Image (cartoon, rainbow, N blue to C red):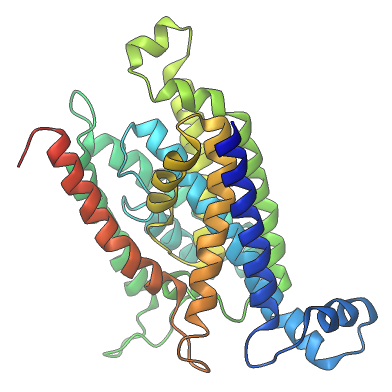
Length: 328
């Protein structure tokens, strides 16, 4: 209990520190005192720029990171697969495509873009589950199916953006995964839908603890396995969908964070879910802060930084899984 609590408090303090540092660092630099005073008085022009451009970005980074990390935790419990993650198995690209398509057709319904994304994410999740299942889920087969679906949905998104020339002339924020130029409307959408998903995830921690068991064992304990699996999957897809709809497709957070979290707080989802939320928020905020600081005034999207970190980690997990299963 002490290690779990200490780990949670340390990560939470780091998140507060990085958020504070990110708020005052950039092309416009203000002190924490000036930021707080300016937000209260509303008379400092530099603080108003920070409020309108930088604070929405920070809030969206934190909520998107938390949503993706918890989505990964839930998917790994549902599929009993340590490689399950929304970005890898095609859920994010499916969500991204439907979000682009339906918001373009019905632009006045932009606030509901996460629900549009949910439809595509749910379809992708169903397809992965269907094509990967044969007397159980094979981790490698699931990755291959996910990569194939990811390619299909990404291709559809690129085709939708194609404007009849040799280059894509209109790139959606959903496909570029940039966190710049976010508005308070984006914050409202992200916070509304992500909060619902995160709260539901915490309430279903006991279901996650039982779903990681074999189906037969869970049924003997009185669990309605299929209903629990569908419910938890829906929450995972919602979290991935809202993140994709607002922040774009950012892979590997849902892969990295749950594995790190299990080392620090164990496998009990009562601790694993809230810790992963805070750690995911920290990781994406750090990635975004680094991205806009390393080669300032130019930026490296957080999604690129996450891919650089997450790619080798995925290879490591696959190799580790092969050794565990007795392969050289």
